[in-house]
Image 1 (cartoon, rainbow, N blue to C red):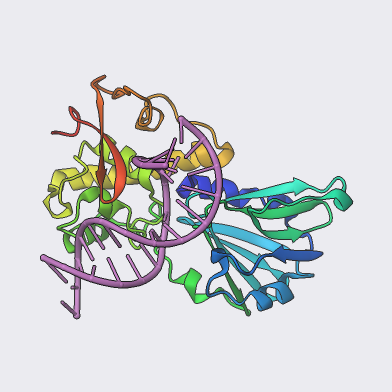
Image 2 (cartoon, rainbow, N blue to C red):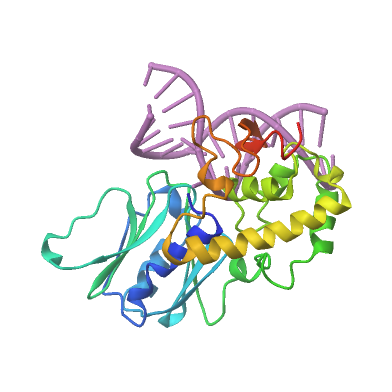
Length: 269
DNA sequence: GGAGTTGTTTAGGA
DNA sequence: TTCCTAAACAACTC
């Protein structure tokens, strides 16, 4: 599930563990989630370390700990973060999908991910790790400009615009539903080649990207609430779903390898 | 049982 | 070389 705003929501789930020390770290190093990660260093550093702060950038999260510990988490398709109150620690049970658990005095901070498409990264040192600092600037920041967006569309001119919006190197945080929502609001057909987006449409696209990101953060990022019924979001998976704008039938197809929903009237053919 | 799932990575081909 | 697509990953639901 997690896209930009959902990631922000999950990041905050661990806030109740801020300033608290990890009494123990539990993980199964065999799972895919830890591929390429120094699990021994992670366990050694985070045990006894305090959680100092966290942030999210696109779909990535970074948790800073004392002892120079930097924990990176990507939720993949089915990952989530939870904080479980430890009422009776002696009878505490963890499921097979609880892949990383930071045991604190009051809460167990858990990374759950049934499909294991997520990822855990770790770095130990005084500064933020390179895999964090090299991430693309947020879509709501001043560094994301119409010019930079258009340059990217031109570079990926042959790919369908839907597929291009899913490229994290330029559109960090956008996932399948956000891409559909943005294209629907911009009235651009999802199969249109990125290079054929008109100047006028690219301005609309730029505007809607920033609007959807801000609104999703405000609505979903705070308490995981549903957006208003005026959004495509609430209609896209309904059988016989209709466009909340023009009331005509919504269409579905696989575009750029992903299930895509659009309005045949508002977005052309 | 088969198909589908709001994400990335990689192999292979154009 | 560069860029695009499909498959793979793993587990669950309908």
